[in-house]
Image (cartoon, rainbow, N blue to C red; front, side, top):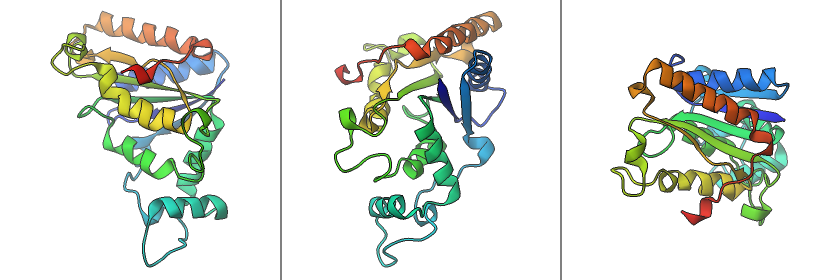
Length: 222
């Protein structure tokens, strides 16, 4: 199994950092191939625009999607973006590791999507959802929250966690063809004891070991 880990947290000693390292170590020890994009360590620039390309088709009026199609046909993505695109195309399973910020992903991760998930290469010409480019691949959100699990139930303070994550799972993953796996959420790790955090890391390790056979998750029902 070929796994791509996209990691988006500014503090390596965070619980997200521990989950990221646990997944990487577990997968490698089990004989799987792993590639990584540690976005903060890379100092990845999340601002999408003309700098995505070595050259553009229309210098007078910039429309990113049309330039992405042009770049796909002519090989004019900058090397950094082309390398990240190749990682996504290479993997069988893509895992995003991040803290939930403002009911979404950190800006650096959203910017990675804005720059890397290019029209013409990752979607377009009818290649979306069931006919998407990545219909043979799986994708998984692994995340932490600030609050307890009770806050993320349907009648909780924040509302259903699945409703919060649906724009990502449906609008990015399923849109480009990925089979979405159930999100792996660790609720309020800062509120847990050391023993509880160790138990959560073990739970994550066991989940990672079973990913190859894990079935998809029904995102659309939420």
